[in-house]
Structure formats: C-alpha cells, structure tokens
Length: 104
Image 1 (cartoon, one colour):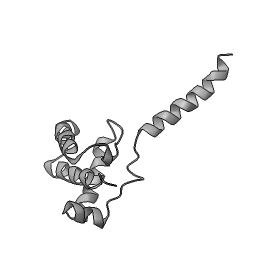
Image 2 (cartoon, helix red, strand yellow):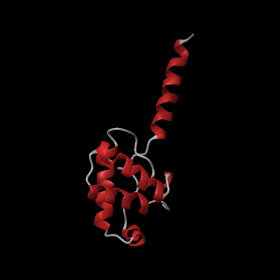
Image 3 (cartoon, rainbow, N blue to C red):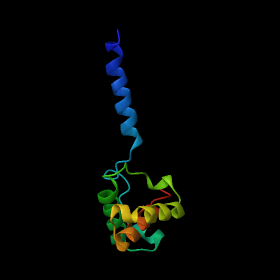
Image 4 (cartoon, one colour):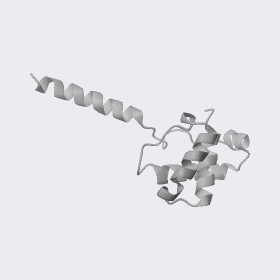
C-alpha cells in the first residue's frame, strides 16, 4: 500500500522543487529599453546577466530580479561578493542587471 504513494509523492516533490527556482538562462535577457531605463550600456547588462548566472547558480537557485528592490539587490550582491569571488566590475554589472529588470 505504501508503494502506491511513492511515485505520486516523488512527482509532487520534483514539481515543487523545480518551480521554486528561476532559470535565468530562459528569462530576462536584457533589452535596450532596460539599458536606457537603467542609464547604462546594454553590454553592461548582458555582462551582469552572464556574471549572475555563472557566479550564483553553483551555490543557490537563481532568483527573479523582481524578488527584491534595487536597494535590497545592492545589499545582497555586496554581501555575497567575497563568497562568490566576483570583482567590483562584475558586482556592479550584476547589480545593474538585477535592478534594470525589476519592473519586468
């Protein structure tokens, strides 16, 4: 009888866990309108997206930019800089990327 519940429970667990994360490789590609809104070059936002994906996904799930305010992203990225071993330039690019995407 217990075996009848294992597969459905496992499927629910996998679904819930996969829906919790954010696959940044599929969403929130910076656009010119975001760069203009953030008053930065589009290349900086693209570099920020790349740095966010490459440096953050190995330790935790990636979060939607809309999860936090620009101020909170700034605080979080500053807090994680040393642990993630990112340069000041990468940090600035990540913050610009996350902040530019907040209203998306």
